[in-house]
Image (cartoon, rainbow, N blue to C red):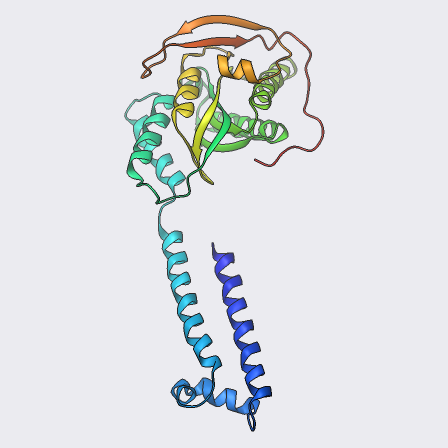
Length: 300
């Protein structure tokens, strides 16, 4: 935002200077000194044949309007920060994290009027993670050790997501909300997370809590920072019913992802707040061949 304003202001000044120099060249008897006089007394320029003054006035007005709009956008709370604050408020009221994220997103979606933001439909996969038993573990470890564990966990999940071409949409505590352009990459990322944590458990004496993961895919409404729609609701609810170190996926994910690991069919499962049950499957991530993405990753 600020960079755009600066670039437009510099362009405005450069064009204005260029037009003023052109006026000096084509106008008989005009000198650069006249430009200094006109800058000191704009009213004088209006009474003479200094035609670049029209550009300076109109362009200046546009720069001022752009600056005021940019300042307003910078001072206005972003959708993401407003939604994050609301999520924290709901969690403090005892609402589970997945439900708090959903409620905050739905409230935010209802708050925004049509046309007030850049909307776009895109097919994507959403991935939700959450540490199992984190509240009890925090109490056992104490805040200092717990904060260190969460920081390490966040770093690991973010690095793994980036390697698999994903993007972070939101984070709250030890949980993540990620998006991917391809469901197969989302599944590969989830498997990499679980296998990476499993390796840490075998090599380290430190506590490595289990993480439950839910993945769904479909059309979503999105802009630079947000992903909204039923695809988000289903993904979060799926993570909510997972336990231990489950990776749960829906049938659309299985249909579109070239899975190299076996599945465990969990059948039709009712999800809170949704009218129809969903066909849910669990990824048996301990089986199969471990793979890592190769080649250049797409930008998300």
